[in-house]
Amino acid sequence: MSIRIAPDREQPSAAIEISLEKPLPDYDLEQVEQPTPRDIDALLVSQGFRDLVDDARGVLTELMCNPPALPNYTHLVDLGLSHVPDFEITQLTGAICPSDDGAYRPGLWIVLKDKKSPAKQSLGEVALEHARVIIETFAKRLGI
Image 1 (tube, helix red, strand yellow):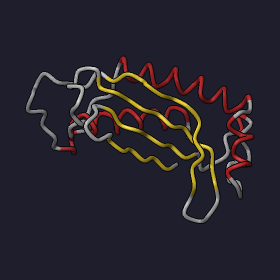
Image 2 (cartoon, rainbow, N blue to C red):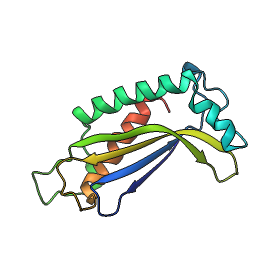
Image 3 (cartoon, helix red, strand yellow):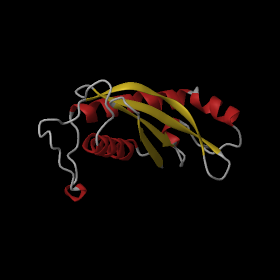
Image 4 (cartoon, one colour):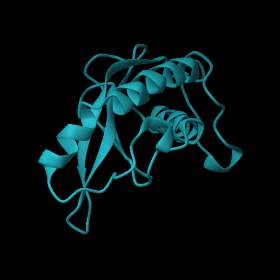
């Protein structure tokens, strides 16, 4: 599994791309590596992938309502002391993820927005770490 988290500039949100690198037989996604983006399109509209997106939305919603705690090794301190991010899902959809070896894989594209942060301010380090912990837990729970 490959996870890429990119904070948006001057917005309290982050885009997350999760590339599926192993088959997911429970979702009938056996051949996840394909030679062209067009071959991935067929996977993204399959019933199995739609089921994965539905399950992903449920798991992610649950994790945002009950977020996991930051691990002790991060050494991050929220100087606001009262600001724990309150993320909402603004986008959850399929993605075509290119790999370094020239193959393409299906993936999930997620955008999380912190409802508590000011509108024209990027996410801080603490909020990004919260997003990372949520997404890592999310991926483990889905087995991706």
